[in-house]
Image 1 (cartoon, rainbow, N blue to C red):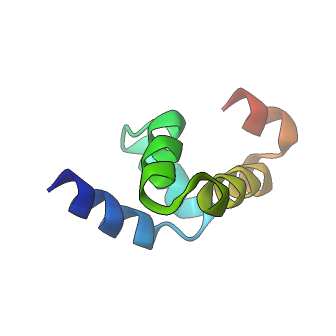
Image 2: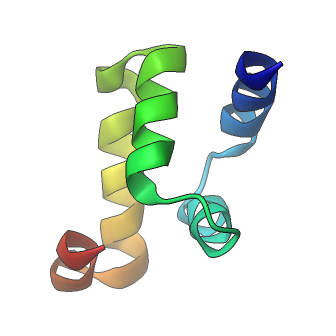
Length: 65
């Protein structure tokens, strides 16, 4: 059940905006990266998530996030 939800959830995350919405809905960045890593492999998702955060907020704020 949890795995299916995570799979559907990550298939919908393609933009920084979606990531921001996930965080605003109470899912922390570490949880997102951990689930993404477990679902798709670390290299495939960690970089786009980080790149999206930097694009959304800039380097300084993304580091703090």
